[in-house]
Image (cartoon, rainbow, N blue to C red; front, side, top):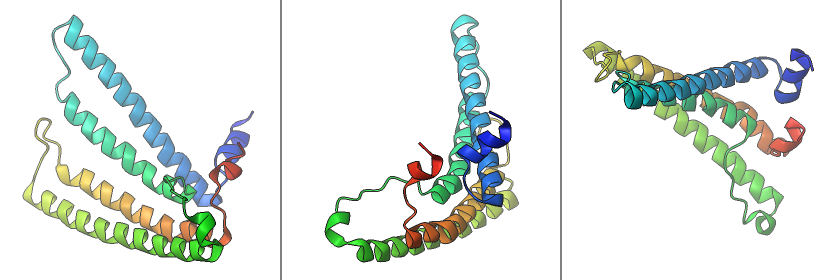
Length: 178
């Protein structure tokens, strides 16, 4: 299968969302691979050479933040959050749709205001020159990244999340072709 065919199959979203998802998932995959390698080399160094990698715990924490917040917009766009639908047969489609729109509004608003506050804290951190404990990296930049990804998540929830609710396109397995 050629690359274009693979991308079409695994990223059914339209245009910019396809490439944004591909980039964000690629970034998460690379960070995950680097975290696995870091952990392996740290364990090997610790047990065989009696010397661990300096700052491995801090690098792992930063890598996890990068990985998790890169996936949030993609998960939101695809509607792949955990959903408990115990009451769906009882409530009916119209009530479910209203509750879905309400949740889209609440979640996107929450992410937006959370991102505003995180960005304010990041700016304050950069002004004060706060750095990470061991490696001395500026702490504000990772907080800015988290805020930007939270804004992107809010935008994804408002656009395609609402579209999914209104058009009943909530079945992720149907879109991916499994």
